[in-house]
Image 1 (cartoon, chains in turn cyan, orange):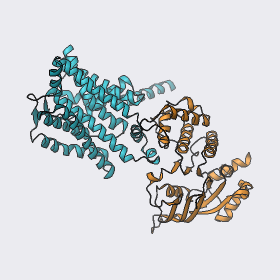
Image 2 (image 1 turned 120 degrees about the vertical axis):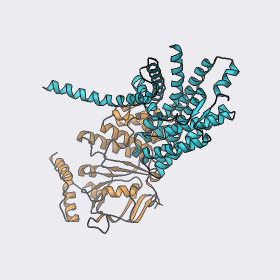
Image 3 (image 1 turned 60 degrees about the vertical axis):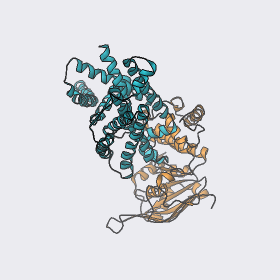
Image 4 (image 1 turned 90 degrees about the vertical axis):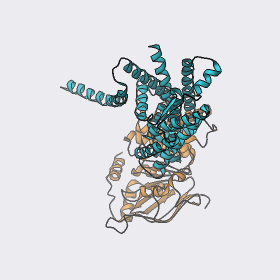
Length: 298
Length: 274
């Protein structure tokens, strides 16, 4: 059980970076960005290729840049060519499938067992056990991303991005170029998503072209669970809640798999159900209120 | 020229040209606003008041004619560039503020050009300024800097919007019936705040209103529009001696029709009873 929990926490920390990216586009910018599915695999692919060349740390930074580029493409399609955000995301995501395969040299998966990763490098230099290093590194990277994002959204530019998602009309009327702030937000979000993919790839020592499928739903589930657990009083708590939500989600999934509640391939259905049900709750709550009031009036 | 803030030269805007619905919203209109002027604008619906504002702010482009702001030709400048110099407040109190940001964050957005803090959005000195400004409103908002704007009432939100527009130090402030969506008491309060803030910041201001009494008592100049033209332009002594009744008579004479707008008649009747 302890092993199960530490595994879930490690995975939860890795996916938390992706969920923070989803939080930026869906919650802060109020843009449903489906690029995520492609940019996650983009991070996986870039990380795998650069790591097998012997540069696991550089691989993480390359993945960050690649993710930002994917976000740039989507925001270009959306703000300049005025394609709806969902379609713009789908277009980028679809083209990324080809690009990701091209990066991986036409193979659908790459093994990293023969090459160094950030984790093996640290194991060698510190002499700690593999499990210990995994826990430390995943928590450390997520903590760094969390700290940087929290700082960023307190800056002047970060505030402009938050205002864009909140009231775009007002932002335009106060001489802020909403295209620029949206673009920056989408680039930042997808950079996080790709970094998460890069971490996952080195963590599990393999890359697969289908790793990004269903990522939007996993991210949203983490955001929603986190909001229920922590709340969203301000933006820093909001980002923190996503990390908590992601870990909680991975623990739920790990337990569900352990007690054989569902087969491994049932994961995506469960994730989708979690999101759908949590979106239903407010509606149900309102209906119950109505019914109660009706009874009182009678 | 130097003390002219805004100049409209023979501006025309026609909607749906060459169709049966052709509508000359602004008809060869020329207008000049002096620095520090506070002009109130009256006119029935469809007289072109809001279209004029849209042309000045850049939401619409003029078909012909030229618009100058502080001597610079802005006829073809896009709206978000003009917004650096032109502040605008709408009827809808929800439009001017970001609801899930706090009061201080909203003010910080407007204050960004003046703030000494270059990187972070709010520092201690900014906060001091915000508290001072908010207490001018007399709504107790100075103690609620961390409250989300979405939790405020329409009147409170409109007051914050006003504050935001004036601290951004615009060359020109456009108020488009900014009290029309508020209840009468709040509207009076917001008008008072408007008066105070405009006097304090000495911003050149144009205000559209349907309240004739307010139009005559606030500011230093009143214009009346009809069919896309300015039919009446009064200031100084003439304006001081003008009453609601005599203005209505003048309107009838100039536009050759009764002032048919219910809201104007209503508010005029209201004022008569007081």
